[in-house]
Image (tube, rainbow, N blue to C red; front, side):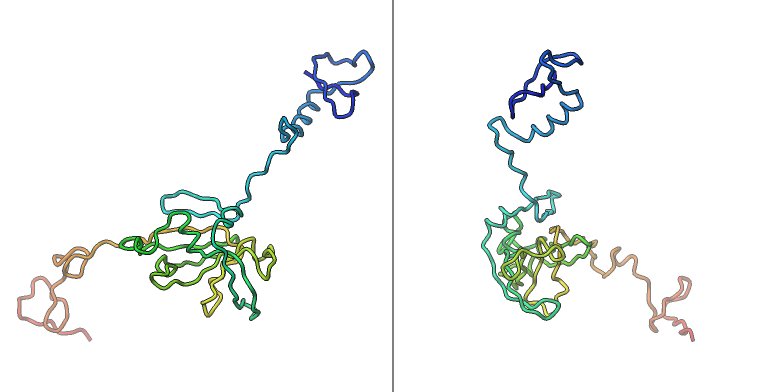
Length: 236
């Protein structure tokens, strides 16, 4: 199967041929040329329309279950818009546009309000930047039923898209006295659960009273062979 050259403009003629010229003197494409041409033709559908590109991913949200969700511009557009005025690291005041982090978490099914209780209160949000910088927030800290700390996932500043050094997504925390939790180049939001420590039985030791050493009257541990009532002198 070859693609004949020399036909009318825009017309591709496919037919079988040997490695010789056509009778009218026109040439045909080699197999290598055919493959290259097909790669150019593939993105075009049968009706001549270009295939739409896949939606751009602005942020990845990782849930406790291990599921990863890609958030694009169309997902941000579904959430209530937020406009906040805040002072950046350089002491300059700017207008930021985006969405509340709490609304984004609610959109992906993270517990809130009355559902945020028990072991859910041990969950937290880890925000990570492209350069490895990381900060965290507890879920209760973000919930209006508790404190309602305002954390905004911003896409614009002063009406313009964020610069490559700040965006395309940036975390802004207007209420913080320091901007240490303002995350530039935000790439990932992970919902995580704090590790549980082993329960401490009655007696104040993970193993109970049977691991509690005997203590003498002076507060010094008695040797096993020492009789009860005897006090070992304190060391100098």
